[in-house]
Amino acid sequence: MLIINEISKTFHKGTQNERNAISSLSLKASDGEFITIIGGNGAGKSTLLNLIAGTHFPDSGQILLADEDITYLPEHQRAKNIGHLFQDPLMGTAPNMTLEENLSLAFLRGGHRGLRPGLSKKNISIFEEHLKSLDLGLESRLKTKVGLLSGGQRQAVTLLMATIATPHLLLLDEHTAALDPTTADKVLNLTQKISKEHGITTLMITHNIEHALAYGDRTLMMQHGEIVMDIAGEERANMTVESLLQNFKAQSGQNLTNDRMLLS
Amino acid sequence: MTAIALRGAIELGLIYSLVAAGLFISYKILNLADLTVDGSFTLGAAASIMLTIGGHPWLGLLAAILAGALAGFFTAFLQTKLRIQSILAGILTMTGLYSINLKVMDNKASANSINQPNIFDWFKAGFGDYGKLVFILILVVICAAILVLFLGTQLGLSIRATGDNENMVRSSSINVGMMKTIGLVIANALVGLSGAVLAQYQQATDAGMGIGVVVTGLASLIIGEVLIGNLIQAVFHKRNILTGLISVLLGSVIYRIIIAFVLQHNNAPALQFLNITASDMKLLSSIIVIVAISYPAVRDSIQLSRLKRSQNYADHQ
Image (tube, rainbow over the protein chains, first blue to last red):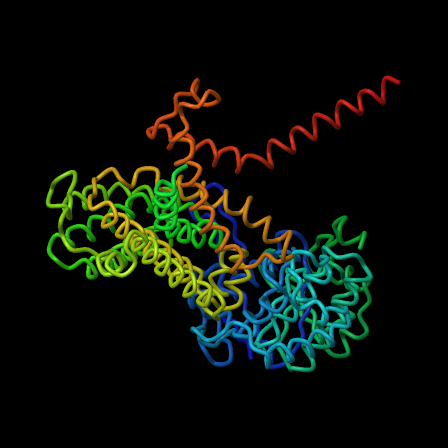
């Protein structure tokens, strides 16, 4: 369970560039819930995820994950329970290390890293099984340096690394935006499958409104650092891209769409 | 080159190969240019010579390892906790160490331990003229074996990943600052040990003996990678931590052999006009490092200008 109580974040406080990124935002996500987040540029979507992940700390408010107050916990410590994927498929893997070495590091997440051998036979058979489930033929390439894989393959591997030691929470920041449509769909389906199988609470930012409505159980819309729309269940099931855009305009008096959203 | 000169060059090369092994961790694996090395090398030497003079040569090696580790820890602290850029952090530690090294050497610019028992005695008694070589070789092999085993552990993997992609390491719940610290501590412990062995080998130290050690080490590292690393890849089709470390260690030996060769033949007609002396070696090291590191940039710009020329040619047809 993720509980966010009235968090705010202002960048460059007290300077001309002062920007209010998140203003007293509250959110509750129950265990296993898959939430998609949409919103225009600068709406505060990525900042929200970064505050949860610990890249930035909020100016005020509180973040609780599985009953633990993580508001000011250092990033690497809360990473034990949080998987975080970014748009850039290169960000989540170490290119000069092999697939099995990358997976080993991710597999040890949350545990102690000591002087035991970094690779073990037992773990490698586990990795093979997981890689098979990706259905990308990667199970035979454990000794390959990750830098030699394609962007889509690397993002799928990153997704696997983020979830191989099951986290409480998965944060996805437009993680399929840099992939071609076919690969993006594949990674998205994989995301949904992994999230459901392990019951991982998931927050996914997307600029693709269709994806936002098609995947997951609940959709949030953000604007000026606030949640301006929060739909689930039947209301969400009946929502179309057009009605969502109209809804947004009615609520905020502005058009949501920018070129990127229209084109995708 | 005479057998004695060759043996001397190999001995020196193996002693300095510990510096190259240290740089293998900080420069190759962690991707940090760690200039602490110039200071921690002399620190190790000073600690070693003073304890040798006091009658404890073995304790001297241990003290040098610990002192080097401490120097590495300090640089890492500046980088990770006080957020000083990595190059500047190294320079600050190195500069501060210059004064500390003088204090360790009883406020004198040099110290010697001639006629004092040292770490080589037992091996000289057993192996005669080859005693020093045997001892140094054993020491280097032990250090290299420990290092390779360490880099294969969970902790070792985490350190390697830190140099490769910090972001991935952080999201795997690894403390990046801690990994850099451990890496720099081990690197400078090796450098301190190298200085300590050299001090007892030449039975003398001086406050300036560490100047340029980092550049010499980088030159060795590059020579090793280019000559030995590529050779191993061509023959065994392998390039991993073990072959990388072996390349770097042998690179240091090759570097010293080249230097010994050049110095011995500096009167040869081909080299005479350059009038190379021992004092030119630092310049030579710098040039080797510059050429090796700038090679990709130079190659790319030559390729680009060729491409442009051929395009112009095609356009004017």
